[in-house]
Image (cartoon, rainbow, N blue to C red; front, side):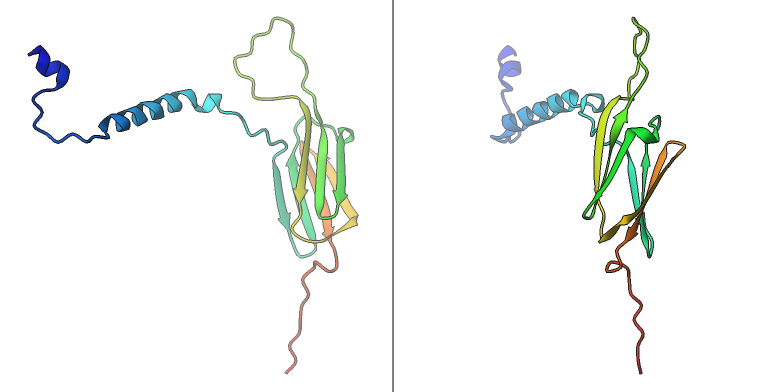
Length: 152
């Protein structure tokens, strides 16, 4: 009876020679699933969040920058790239404060957005309103679509 339980004897079903390897693989999968729960994964750290749209004449870049003042931002246009950098400051908590959740981070940030076409760097306008930065970049004349008439 003891021999039968310890050694699974007699066995009337076919056992794969790789069964032990498969069992070890399942255990390793469970181990890594437990170790990599979503709250422990590293965050992407992409700030600010950006939408890039375009129409016939301009590109529009809208960035979420809550709590950032316009004079704390540096916006530069180089080639086909738009760079937005600055620093987000969050007021320090009182000493002895315990956090239950901390998702807002302070610190310097920088984003470089590649625009899909040629731009006119002399015609760039930016405004910050209600925590949303809107940068309007005019397309270069060469990048604007041309209407071609068909002669018959």
